[in-house]
Amino acid sequence: MKFSSFLRVHWAAVRALLVLTVITGLIYPLFIWLVAQIPGLHDKAEGSIVSVGGKPVGSRLIGQLFTDASGNPLPQYFQSRPSAAGNGYDPLSTGASNLGPESMSLLNQVCSRSVAIGKLEAVDGSRPFCTGGGVGAVLAVIGPRDARGAVIHPTRVISVNEPCETTSAPFLTSYEGVRVECAKKGEDYSIGQMVPIRGAAPADPVVPADAVSASGSGLDPDISVAYANLQVARVAKARHVSPEQVRDVLAQYRTGRVLGFIGEPSVNVLQLNLQLDRRYPVTG
Image 1 (cartoon, rainbow, N blue to C red):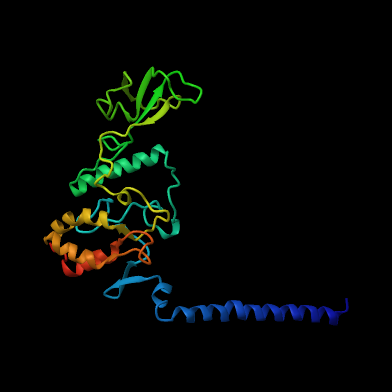
Image 2 (image 1 turned 30 degrees about the vertical axis):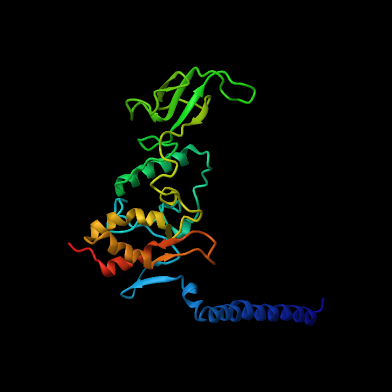
């Protein structure tokens, strides 16, 4: 190839690079930025940041924790739902726990959270398939099995989530005529058939599902109306106001279903708490 042809080819490549750089690196980003300034889009483009006294305190689109330095819920604030994103509501670690519906770890999490919320809100924290101590009510049933793998005649039954070191007796005394043992730490009971026990808890627990389970993103900024109503008495007491006064503020931040039929009514926790701070600040 002649030197002149070499220069023409490479000069054409350089010009194409410069043109594409200007278009994709300058013009296109500038165009998107200008579109983002259109009324109605500007707030979303800026991340829906909420400021107090000129200082950003959060986003309406990303949840956050309202706890003290030790992770304990602050009584004067409505609490968000659990989060599996990092240490909780970490935008850089967004995601779910990936625990399936038959996961014993997930069941234990749900049970322990339900008991904790029951104590915090002074309500019944029991729920189906959970023990009173806040672990999954699951038995490992050992014995001969039929062709489908189900145990025919139990010879040994163990409460797998309750080690003997933490309880004096299992949540159930007997199962199909066999005495229930409490699990011993370090022993493997995987040979047994895992049988969840529903228990006597009501089918519709007082503590709602979103209070004990994380969202798929781990960043959900909203809670259900049921979970918000559950917290009214505690928040009112901490702020020395009546529950009716708190409910009036709550009603302002309750949103309905999208298009009237998609999803469920919800409450934005950050906006609700900030409005409570403005109207009924905690002093002393």
